[in-house]
Image: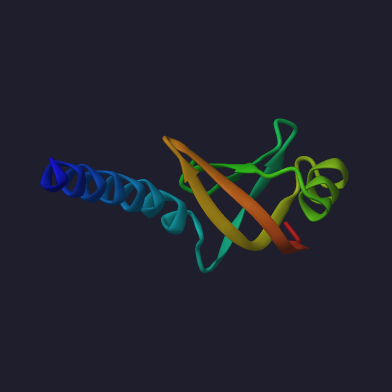
Length: 96
């Protein structure tokens, strides 16, 4: 009986550790993306890749003031299934 409890505890510990792996994969290094800002809270790069802009102070500033403009954006990238979410750290509007 005692051995069964130990095995159950090991299984539970393993499951907890495995569930923490995706959370650590979410943190990322800064990335730089260039593309056009649209009115759907997105930036679209020259390859057509769409990045959702996270609702933060910098992200809101970018989208609310620069729709239709090209920008160079630095931030962190997270992926939620097929959606790439960009948390803007800084941005620069590019001359066309």
